Each structure stands twice: as structure tokens, then as C-alpha cells.
Image (cartoon, rainbow, N blue to C red; front, side, top):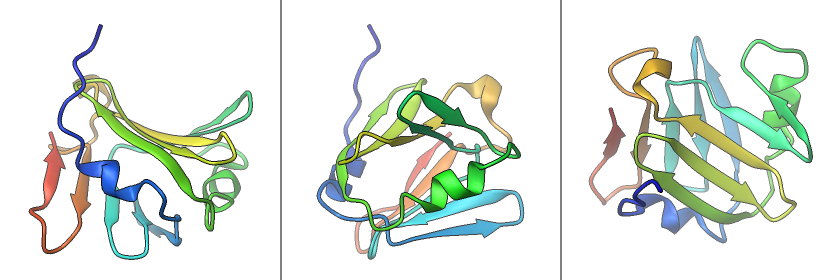
Length: 119
């Protein structure tokens, strides 16, 4: 069973995804202050469908999360970052080093707290 590490993302629980920003080849998820930059492309899970970067309806599925409240946000070491929403949908970012596209998988900014980097 994977080890659950300290959860800097817990602060997102009860907040809404306020915007999604596509920046060339990565995505930034804004939560009315805190920002999660996903360098490893996130997957979106809605009901029994999964949407991946570059696939049809990916952007729509991701942007449809805007305004939805986060019910749970967690990190499972070397597996994934997972943000779950009240409607049962979720966004996940792989933390498997084989999936990394750069030195980091994701960066979480929540000033004045220290920046968290998953690498």
C-alpha cells in the first residue's frame, strides 16, 4: 500500500476551481488564491470516462470543473496528485517518474506558505 505523505493540498478542500490556464505545454489550475501548476499533463475523470491531454473533449472536461467545489485533495507518494470534486469528477497528475515531462511533475503555490514541488 502506498504511503500517504503530508498533504499541502488539503487547503483546497471546500474551495472551488476558479480558472484553468493553458500555458503552451502545461496547465495551471487556480483555486481563488492557491495555484497548482501541472507540468505532467493532468487527466480528468468524469463518471466512467477519462480524458487525456491532446484527446478530443479534454479541454472541455477540464474547463467544466471551473466553479466546482473540491471535496478532497491528496498526494500519494510516487503515484499521483488527486483532486476530487463534489460531483464525483476528479483531476489527477501522475507522480510516476516515467510520466515526467520535465524535472518536476507539479508545483503548488499558496503564499505565504512555501512552494511545494513534486519531482
